[in-house]
Image 1: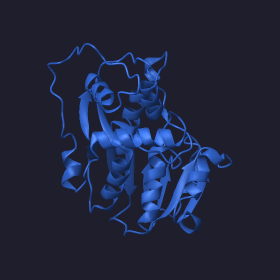
Image 2: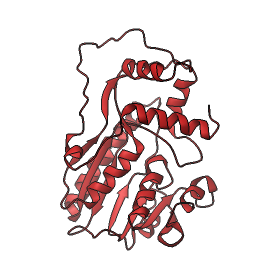
Image 3: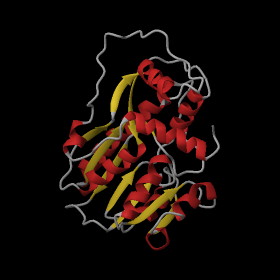
Length: 269
C-alpha cells in the first residue's frame, strides 16, 4: 500500500499556482505531474538523479513541461535539497518513498515506515499550522508513463508470466489515474481534511487471480485453489469519501486491460 500527502499553507491556493511533487518521476508521480500541468499548474518535480534520462525524459515530454515544469534532484534525508524544491510552492504532494517488499528485519519493513512517516507528518502539520490531507491507495495498477515498471507493476507482470505468488490475503486495488485524479481533487477542494482510502475495491487474491484468468486465458496465470478466509466479506465501495467528492473509479476490468495493453506496447509481454 502506498500513501500520498498533500499540504498547503493558510487558506487554499487558487488553481494554476506553483506546486511541488516529490517522487515526480515515479509511476503515480508522473501521472500526477501530467494532470497538474494539464490543469495549468507550474510544477516542481523531484527526482533521485537528474542526469538519469530514465527519470526525466518522460516528464520533459509532457504537454506544458517546457514552460511550467522544473526538475529538482533531492535526497529525502538532505534538508537543503528538499528546501530548494519546495521554495515558492503553494502546496506539496509528497509521494516519494523507498519500497522494500522483503526484509530480514521486521523493524524496517515498508508498512511500518509508511505508518511512522504519516504519523510524523500529522505531528509536524499540527506544530507548524499546515493543512494536511492523506491519501491511502491500495495496490496501484494501470498504464505507465515511465520507461520501466515499478514494484506493483512488476508483481502483476510476474503473475501474467505464470509465477505462483505465495500469498492469499486481502488487498485493495486502484487505477493509477484515479490516484492522481484524487490527489488533485483533494488539493482543489476547499478545506479538505483527514485520511482518504483510495481503492476501487478490496478483494482477496483468489478473486483477483480468478478475474485475470477469466479476462486473459491466453496467459498462464495460476489460480489460487483454496480461499482460506472465505467467511470475510469483500468490500466493493471502499472509498466513499472520495466518491462523495465526485471521483468515479475506473472499473477493475478496464484497469487490468489498460495495464496489459501498456505491457504489450512496451514489449514486456
